[in-house]
Amino acid sequence: MREVHEGDGVAFLARGGLGPDVAVVTSLPDVSEVGLSLEAWRTWFTDAAELACRAVADRGVAVFYQSDVTIDGRWIDKGHLVHTGADRAGAACLFHKIVCRSPAGTPTPGRPAFSRLLAFSRELRLADPSVTPDVLPQLGAMTWKKAMGVAACEATCRFLLDHTPCRTVLDPFCGMGTMLAVAEAHGMDAIGVELSPRRAARARALQIR
Image 1 (cartoon, rainbow, N blue to C red):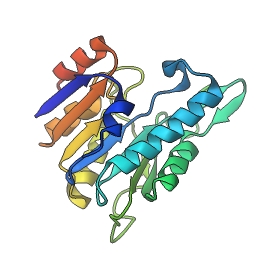
Image 2 (image 1 turned 180 degrees about the vertical axis):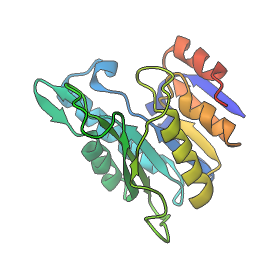
Image 3 (image 1 turned 90 degrees about the vertical axis):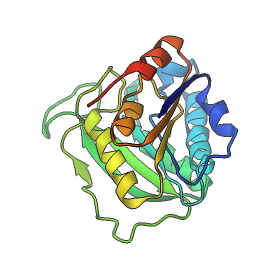
Image 4 (image 1 turned 60 degrees about the vertical axis):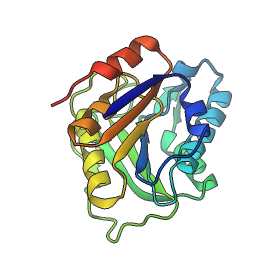
C-alpha cells in the first residue's frame, strides 16, 4: 500500500501519533529548496531532524540520507546537523554509513563523492552494530537528480525488515517517491508527503522492480 499526500512534511510530522511499526526515512531539503537564508535553513534543518526523531515511536527508527553541500567556499556538514537534532530528541545513532556516489579517488569539484546514511532511535538498540556494512560502494540508480539512490533505499529496507519492528516507511519529503517505491517492492507499506503537486503525482506512479 502506498499513499502520497500533497502538503508540508514538517506539519505532517508535527501531528505525531505514528505507530510503532512506522519508520521515517527521508532526505531533508537543501537550502536551495526552501527559500531561506543559510542560517535560517540550518535552524530549520536541525529542527526538522529533531521533529522526525521525536515523531517515531520509542523503538521506531528515523533514517536520513543526506549529501553535504558547499556554499561560498564552506562545506555544510548535514550529518552534523542531523546528529544535533537527534541529540535534542534523545535519540541515539544506530549507524552512520557512507554511500559512495563516485568511485573512491575520483575528484568531484563542488560536491562530495559520498552521501551519509544515518539511523536513529530513542530506545531500539542493535545487538551487533556491525551487522551491516559501514560503506555502501554504490548509490544505485537515481530517479531524479535529488533522489536517494535505489541501492541505498534497498539497503535501508533490508535493515528495517531484519533489525527493527518497522514495516511502514514514511517519507515526509518524498520528492518523486524513490524510497516509497522501493519500500513497496519489499512488501512494506509506504506513506509520502510532498509539497509539489507534480512530484507528488510522480511519487504515486513510480514503479521499481
